[in-house]
Length: 101
Image (cartoon, rainbow, N blue to C red; front, side, top):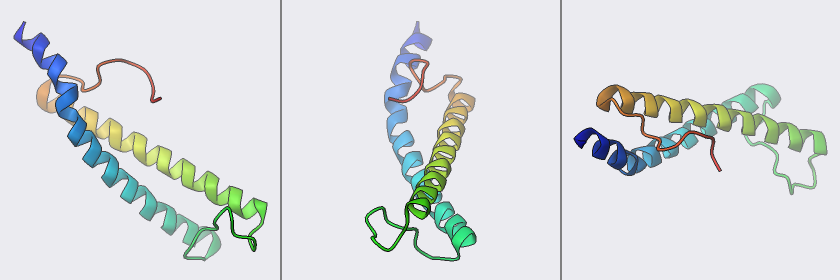
């Protein structure tokens, strides 16, 4: 029965860890996107959607690349954090199966 209580409390205890991992993952993804954009277009800044001097193709390419990088990094960070918690506690930190909202 004590193990069942541990399973119920772990997701709440994991929330601060998840927040820190999310912040670190966002920072890492931003850095990866800047380097990727520099390699693709040889520009330091990606185009802003409201920049009148940029075309649709350029804006949409930047958005697609940025979205793909952020999704991949977020998934890797979330999965790595959950696996680390499971290895250290024996309990998976998520209370239910399924994707994000």
